Image (cartoon, rainbow, N blue to C red):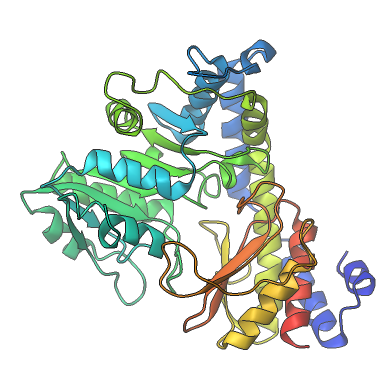
Length: 415
């Protein structure tokens, strides 16, 4: 396949040789966690017993929408949650996260970020923007990570001992920070640490990019709530939009009251006929995630062979669907994004240009040509124009497409 791609797309000899070595290094990699994930998803479908008549959907208020109810029940089974709220009206992962934080950390109470500074748009919503949680009276602290990128559990313990602590927030993915993504075991240690000190404090995990990558989810190991986007891993490239909050029944109800209205809670919400896409997307999601991991391992091996620092390393155990590649200079970063864009199934003739993005301090450049707008389970990348000029490669529902994207990005970097 690599030889065919290199020949078909005119890849030069240097990148071609590196690609052959990268393919040999990664072609026999296995993903044992994905076997258990597939079994978990299949068991959820078996136990749920969805009928085709359940998928019709509703409009308007969405009373008694069977597609919504069955889909949310399916997600609860897959995520190990008592209850799930999954709605088109939740427009992004950040929207889901902020809604959950606002419901669990009320004005006058303290919210603690256990993994240091959150990614730009979320921190903006917590404490910097007009109308932020802090502006509404929530107290906010960040526990810096240790130098090796691990959680400082001792410092977290001290922070949680504060009498006004209400919620601890955990961001699994690296965002735009040069640190490792957190695995489920790390989330379990945080939950255990918090509950040992203050059982009433709610542990919320930003699960974006991490769903179905490991054998378990944070809700299997002590997290009270997980939040994320339905156009990432769980959507399987088919879900048209939406976000979710899953976990303890009482907390999900609290979030729904905050999102909609007290008394209405989760009883409303039409699926507009998209129930089939949501359910089918979840059914194929484990296969899509596995394809993504395979493509990212090849990209990591290719750019490591070409002399760049990559994280994770090819073949390392992955905890999300993001690959960091340190390009060290803005020119290389812009060439990478342009090369990747040329591989997109849509908008391949466009050239990415850096510009302002709401919620981000620095200009950001992105490559994307997804069938679902913004769906980062499909191949994409983005990067802020700031040192160390890391680009974050994401997704790839067909591994060969991710390989092509990596080849064209590398070709552009060395042109």
